[in-house]
Image (tube, rainbow, N blue to C red):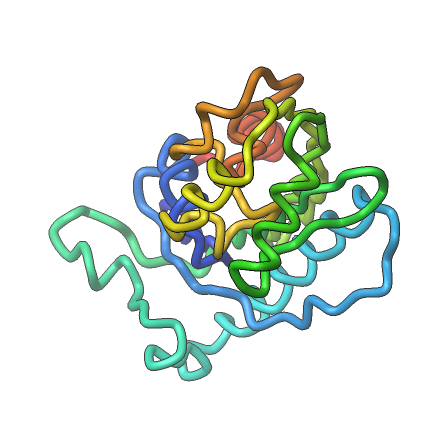
Length: 216
């Protein structure tokens, strides 16, 4: 039988990327507490991804705990009734978290437009690191890992930064930018996995899932 795959994230970008691995999956955003006192970025994103996956994994054990009003989602077995999707208790939950790091400072999502300007001002003309932690959880195995990508950003004028902020794109993203959108014109190069910067290291995740026999 097919596995029941659940993405513990409401990020549209992660949803698009996961489609490269699984044709059908459910989206159940995690309610895990993300306030952790961990300074090391690799350790932080890895633990956050584990907490997100674990919270959803525990919650979906009982369908009554799945609150549609909160998640806004229904099981894909219902949404795609004609898709031959098979209901199963063979569950795989995937959690992920992404952070941007510059000079050991972790840059999260901006609080407002002024904060977005501050963050982008710090990133322009320099390179920074993007870390994404990933955990997949199955009754028989739990695997956590992270990927790091270096991003090089061109010099930006204050007007260019403000124009980009006006698009609204920075406001829901770590580091106040989305590399896949209009900010791409300011990215002069990357070292590592591009998809990692978008929010999910697809190639690494595919390999880990394949090695753990989680693809069938």
